[in-house]
Length: 497
Ligand SMILES: [Zn+2]
Image (cartoon, rainbow, N blue to C red; front, side, top):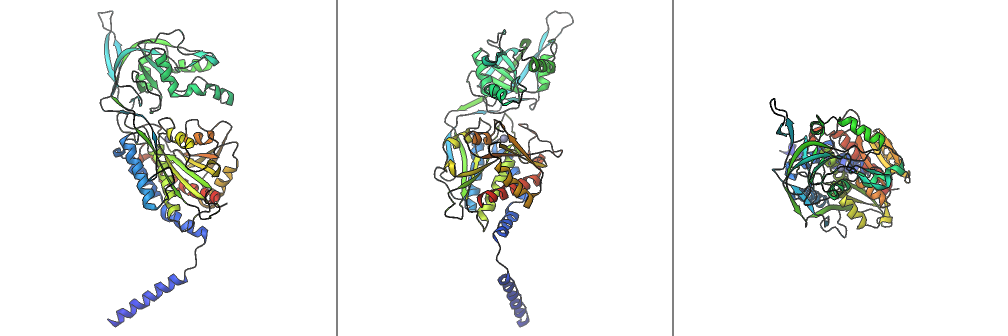
């Protein structure tokens, strides 16, 4: 017994002795220590998988599913000890956000004429398509319509550029089939700006309603960002359905599009077919958007009121009417943001300046969360050194840093961080025009913040944008980890400079 006690005492002495001899960690070593503990591919991938679960119902802004996701982020911030900022009680900055939820029972089919041997009149047969070839309109009115389908090109009426898809056609009481975007193919700033208002999905719905259409088949990826008219019912369609509608009309879909783009001349026509669109939707006028915001305070009393913001949107498309996980768009970014937040919150070293983390709501619903934040900021804008906005960072091999030409200094911080600790291929993307007009990053840039939009791309990885296949099984956990490390060290570069 005595022997055992002696051995235990020696062991204890040895352990204590070892501890006592351990050298003090430097600031950088403390940062490294926190990074290795809290930013791991396994942990970040776990967040993506968790938020991709159908229990979150695709996280539509203003829905129960999004509220659940916001609570999840809120609880993590609380658990890790992030500070609350004035204006975001319990880490939540809420704002009015009326929403439309698509319910089960929403369907879409096309009526195709089938010629009969002994009759001049065809028989009309309803063709149903599997979900994935069509999607419910994310902001559709509630009800059922059956009407003739008229092809109306891009659905654009732009008098100042002399272009009108509705010229010479009658769409009153009909369903229009239209494309996303515009016929513009130029990348020149002046042209992009001229056509910009007509790229907005809201324009397509408003313009169709103005011309008397009762519904729309929209050839574009699904989303809840089209404006809302309670009497206008619509669904998204993909190429197989569009090809069925074009069949037998004497027009070929791809060639028609090519011609419109080339000649800037509309080619609208009545397709001689009908569609039935039944959308079971509920309008919630009093719903709220929820930005989840927490802070890690800077360590230098003189500089702690200056900041770096790390942001990414937490919302997605909701149920349309089935579940879309949005694993890359944008659970990947939430995972990275949360990993970086935990590392800074628990690190023994803190940068001189503070870091504000914003899980943004309503990106998919028209950038409402970033718009609300930039109009109602919780920290003074002139104290913000950089906004690092994350957008789809879970699929790919290289990291793209998009920024405005006016802020070339931002790339230096990323290059410095990458060279020291990450070693990924970075592609710098300077833009005269604001990077992608439909990202939260663009909202911050337009509001005058020095801001970068970060995304992952390439390496043979396939990403599925606004598609049911955008699920956790397509995510590359290693790129998640490296983006998080890059954001972590870049934030240190800026916040400690
Ligand atoms: Zn997104």
